[in-house]
Image (cartoon, rainbow, N blue to C red; front, side):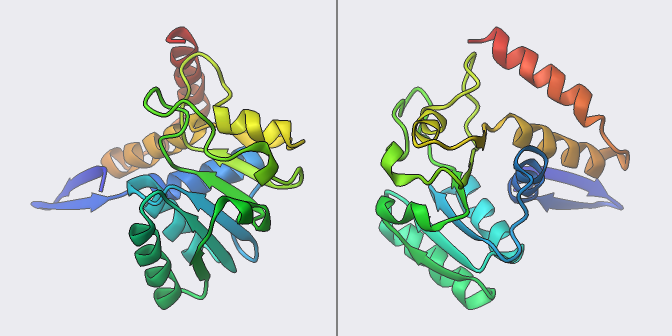
Length: 194
């Protein structure tokens, strides 16, 4: 839960990670989950929300990677039991099986500056959405590895942040947010802090 709405004397919690990711993947990469395959790198908070949203959105197969194999397996079991998606824990060698790779690990942040997967793990016709927002440089290390493999359709986490903000704004005000104005503001600030 990352957004709380107060209504009629009650609090309602919402998580905008999954819906924000799906909206960003559609806006930036023209990707919709139904009938496709996907892989999620990192099954922590945001990665879990992204994986569940992809499963409920209709991906047929979902590969899960995490440094904590138990966490990844628990999530795979939950998804397989509750949705029509076949979910399983995979290694980096199987990332190429996914139409979409969602990079949701800390890779690309200061604490983990390397790519989440090497170039050899990607196919040129895949799409990659990396939820990390790199300060100053629009490309994350994982995006660079993907491009090295010949991939051309990738995005960083800026649009996801905008979509999450727009969802929160709608919860709080009942109004539609100006996503393009928000996107310009976020991109300007990210560039300024590089």
